[in-house]
Image (tube, rainbow, N blue to C red; front, side, top):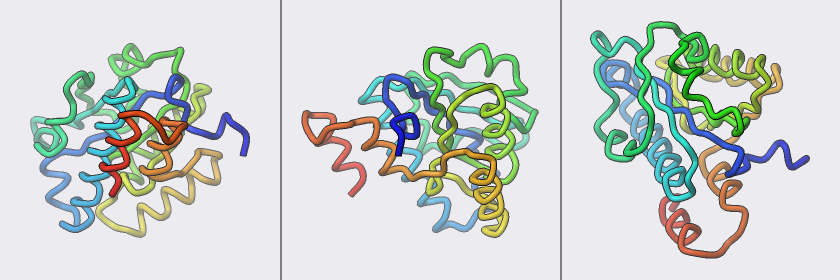
Length: 185
């Protein structure tokens, strides 16, 4: 696999899309627990490794705030409110993107709407998009599978939380490695 297909820490930024209270209430409880755990792992790893984070909330007045389980890990993250499905369609989002960090790791909800549209538009703009398969969700599992299939067909990298965090680390050494190893257990 060419190195450009790996999530490089100095080239990466993390985007958590719409993990909000009312959307989460429509999901399977077990699935939302897995999504929350994996998003939290990505957020904590990003914090340890200085990977910038943006998170979005789709119409928070109607869909509520980001889940409390994630808020505690969003310390330095930039929050963007939106009504467009694609994050890239929101000028405030585009202003927060780090152009010197062309790898964008995506997680969140819903895989077949906001995650899919954002991934495809970012890819069209020349970003290397990496979707954490175990950190995205749709109300209907078939819709998630369809979205992941479409993303793969379009050339978006579909990976997982543990692979991404260890690609960011690169080496099995140091305090960050020990802490992240504990997170993924």
